[in-house]
Image (cartoon, rainbow, N blue to C red; front, side, top):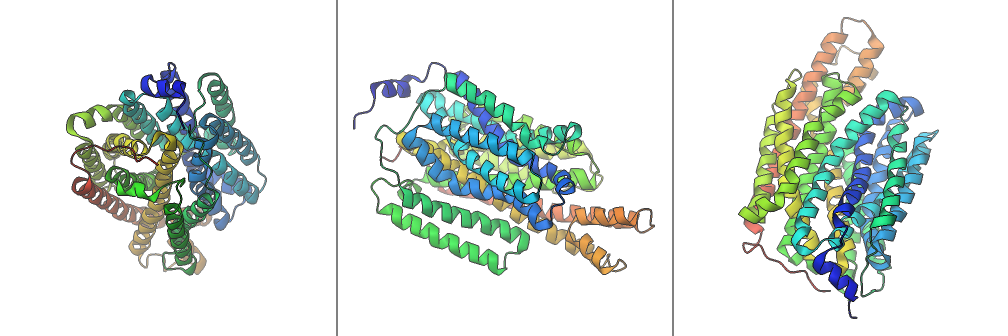
Amino acid sequence: MTADPATTQLVATGHPRRWQILPIMCTCLVLVVAGVSSLNIAIPSIVRALDATQTQQLWIVDAYALVFAGLLLPAGALGDRYGRKGALLSGLAVFALASVAASYADTPNQLIVARGFMGVGAAFVMPATLSIITAVFPPHERAKAIAIWAGFAGAGGSIGVIAGGALLEMFWWGSVFFISVPIAALAAVMIAAVVPTSRDDEQRPLDPIGGLLSIMGLGALVYGIIEGGEAGWGEGSTIGSFVVAAVFLTWFVRYELTRPDAMLDPRFFRMPRFSIGSFTLTMSFAVMFGMFFLITLFFQFVQGHSPLQAGLRNLPFAAAMVVVAPRAPAIAARIGARYSIALGLMLQVVGFVVLSQIQPDTAYWQIVIGLVLAAAGMGLLMPPSTDNIVSSLPPNKAGVGSAWNDAVREVGGALGIAVLGTLLATGYRDSLGDSTAALPSEAAEAVRDSIGGAYAVAGQLGEAPVVGPLLETANSAFTDGLQIAFLVAATVGLVNAIVTLVFYPRDETGSPVES
């Protein structure tokens, strides 16, 4: 089929309002990313208000990630087929309506369902933002635009924590969800007025079987990762989830190889830039999401800061990301994407080594050094890695390419929180040793379960002489576990850098695969 001349012209010169479209897309992106991170800081308030059990707490957090990850590829394919602007507007509408339901939930189960529908909306929003940017920017400006998008993708986590802390200081717990409604409404008005419609010109048929297999495979994979971090990696439910994921993802690959109109052609992974970009983003987002989760706990429990104070202490990370990411394309052009990504990974490694020296009384300026180094590394590696993924695919697969880019981030984030959280918990319990022997069995179990449990027990004991030593021991044990987790994060970054240097193509070239 012959491409639309207007579309051909748009690809060559870019949309005349592309620099107005970019901030709108970044706003939608931050809305989705911040919607995840703000919840972490709101969980204690939600537990008090809704009396959620431990299992319900986990599902309030995880329902979103599970639905979001599973639907990303089909949502991207639908955007390619029927229009990315329509997919974005539909996703914003679902996200906003679900946010209203979440903010006024009366029971934990209602909140869990609402969070799941927020994941549905986010699955249509996030890939649409990047695919629209890819469509409206000409090739010579696309890397810079993607770099700015990537900067806000990384900073969105910090922005969500800060905004969530501020809202909790002034309003009720549901405000962390309701704030999304006016932002989504304003974004929708601007999208309707400014953003053009774009889609796959060839109007290829949908791939419903491939979509279903990807939902089952990615959903089971993320569930297994979440379950491994909570129940244990050797538990039957965890192993069973990974087996189900392996079966469906293998089936997905075999099925897609037989289809001329495959949703995501597995042959794309033969392209080093696509496969290395996917690996780099997965591992980088794993350690970044894990870091946000752990450092926020450290600020609130060990150093006793309020949710807002803890959120503000993440601000240097967001600032460094926004400053460094837009400069990444110029650096990659000067030294090559291969070395730019490896340099970013090594900065990340140094940042985690600095953070691994944390003690309960560590000065904030020392923590800032680690945060800024890790953020600068992310800002340097994310834009070229993202560009490697989306530019490796043909233009008619922009939505699917963007969705895959988001899927590897989501899988990486779930993996990082689960693995680093497990390392922290193991180090914490090992460091406690038999220090809880003098406590009643139920109290001792709560202390050994988490630092939050230790502070809950301390609150129940009131002014008892044992409280001071108990909290001092728990804080010390927590930082011992934190050190282990951050050293492992540094090791992951080092391995990632070695893989990039060894396997990234030397000629730095790569043409989209025609499909």
